Amino acid sequence: MSDQTPKVTGVGGVFFKCKDVAKVKDWYAQHLGFPIDDYGAAFRFKKMEDPSKTGYLQWSPFKENTDYFKPSEKSFMMNYRVQHLDKLVSNLKSSGVTVLDEIQKFDYGRFVHILDLEGNKIELWEPVDEVFDEFYKDTLPSSDD
Picture 1 (tube, rainbow, N blue to C red):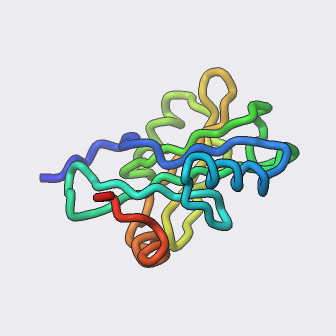
Picture 2 (picture 1 turned 90 degrees about the vertical axis):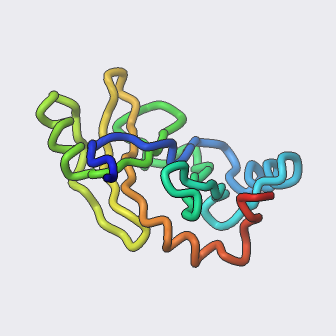
C-alpha cells in the first residue's frame, strides 16, 4: 500500500539570485560539470520507493532583480517535492501557515508557494516526472553514471 500522507518527499530544486546568469551557468558547467540547459541544470535520480522510476532536481540561477522570490527578500528559494498537494495545502492553512497563491497546474506538475516562519518563500511541487523523462532522454547522463 502506498503512503497517502501529505508531505514533502525530497528536494525538488535550488533557486538563487546572481548578477550574471549566463556566466554563473557557464562557470558551473566548466568547473563542476553541470548539465546546463535554458533553465539551469536538472539532476536525475532513482526513486527509493520504486527504483525503476526516476525523479528530477532542478538547479536554477535567477537574475538578482527577479520578483519570483517575493515577498521574501532572500537571495534563494527552495523547491520541495511533495505528495498529495491538495491535502498538504489544506493542512498548512489549518495550521496558520501563509499560503501565497492558489495551486497552479502545468504538464510537469502542480505548484504552490508558502512562507516559512522566517519569511523564506518555499515552492511546493507535486511533480510529473514522466514529462522530464521524455524531455531529458537524450541530454542528461544516466542516473547509473
